[in-house]
Image (cartoon, rainbow, N blue to C red; front, side, top):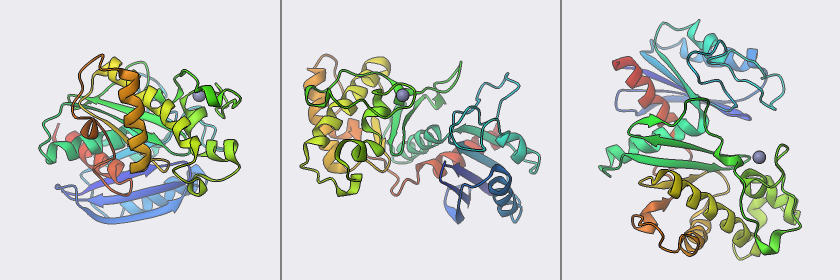
Length: 290
Ligand code: ZN
């Protein structure tokens, strides 16, 4: 069996071909330019193979309601030229195999869910947050995404402000100080004038950020009671995660029981942001077998 994966990001596309064991056989990365050029490159790449299924995990917002006329479209994205693009339709028109369609972070969530299964973790739910240029999350419960009216937008929840951060307005163009507006990668520059990689882990800004991310983990815990919460994306590292766990424990105050905290709030099992590719393979395989 040969499976294709498109991880469609706002800055780059990662296309991969894998086998039934979800092992990557070949992979290419190219910048996200115009829809015509970028989708054209993806199609040309996959035409070299006789694929049995393709999984797409795309930046958004995207239309995921199967009964919508715009199903498969990227909708009102701020990314120039990509509004109202029939992404799924374009791929489907060129390949005679099942094609799955979900958000980038759902793809990663499903990849981590699949990895957890393969690692015999015996879980049936997880939440995957990505904290990078933006913030988003995907929820998988019993192998299914939480989505009906649309995909979740858990990066845009409102939070209690940190007392030492009250003057920062936040950077979300829609909400100002929502989660994304307070902890996305570009907030480093907005708060300190330095990029994230130049802000040492002992800088107080990390404590402000962990206070917010811990609150997101609290809301997720209380809303879904998942088996684990994974944090991926460029902003996340193990030392930051330790701060998040510390603040999470303080804020939760043992209100509900959770698994071992180290295992509950955790980094992705897949290194180098490879979760979405694995998720796409698993979703495409599932579609092929259904
Ligand atoms: Zn927002």
